Length: 265
Image (cartoon, rainbow, N blue to C red):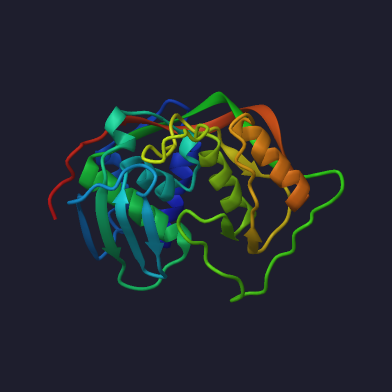
């Protein structure tokens, strides 16, 4: 297994930009690195963009509830959603339920290879690598230094849906900010909550700070202040961090083809 994994990884990284990795290629290359048991099917009850993509990863398991194929690609290749280019519109809309189990515990890298093989066999996913100029934000330490400290392992409180409490790494915070920046100012109509829209600008953690953080974020919801400015104020005043805009060459994955309906279990 290790031999086939290192061979495929080398082939994928060494392939020139624009090289298409087809279903047949991936299936042949990854046949030795597959989940023992896997179920992939359309979700019976779609929940929508703000509540989907629920993922649980164990030592030998991967579970996705109401997960889009785009998010599956993100998890399989360890990239940011903004690094997935092209593909049909439904890639980020249709929701699926995925349950997969390996025969024994495996490192994260091997589980990702298994997930890549699963996408190739069930969705007939074909991709190629490509670099593009993208606008990004970098999360960095502000000039006064950080105002946060990581918690000890096992400490802290998990975040609740819809709360301003955050629990996780600073890259996870960066991912949250990326989505939050796409949410428009709330309307006066409480029956029409603001929803995330548009393609998020990727936010990369460049603070150099490691560990897990437990944060209560106080956000002043002033409709006259743009979302970016609100987050910048919170980061600088409460956390000792800030966002800086950059233009950068980002290597991503272009989706050439994919089946909307996965191969039956």
